[in-house]
Image (tube, rainbow, N blue to C red):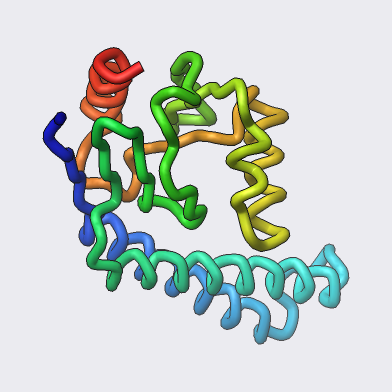
Length: 173
């Protein structure tokens, strides 16, 4: 039996995300309440766009707050597979036997792991909620797999996460 590896959530990163999201949402409300922030654009269009931004950053702040108070490990790795609790999508166990290969992706400056599987419907069917399912389907269409992970909320950098996942997958596949 292999030792269980647990990687904690980074409270510092979650706190930063929470504070930044709250500040951006507040700035959006303040700008929205200004009489004419953009003289060449219809004020109602500006207010609508700002309202959407405020709602999005309010949701981000709630997600960051949830991770800030979450006491569970962000990532658990054992002989069965990976449980990723670092993001907003709860996946349960990603079994080693379902992973066909691992690839590194990058969007802007953010690197992430793509865990390719020959059984994507198994993981897509576990997801509750229309928004979460939509996000995973977009991952599947863009990356070829619904299973992606990053080190963004973890107490580990991406290079270490990448090496750890490759090493453990190599042991257990």
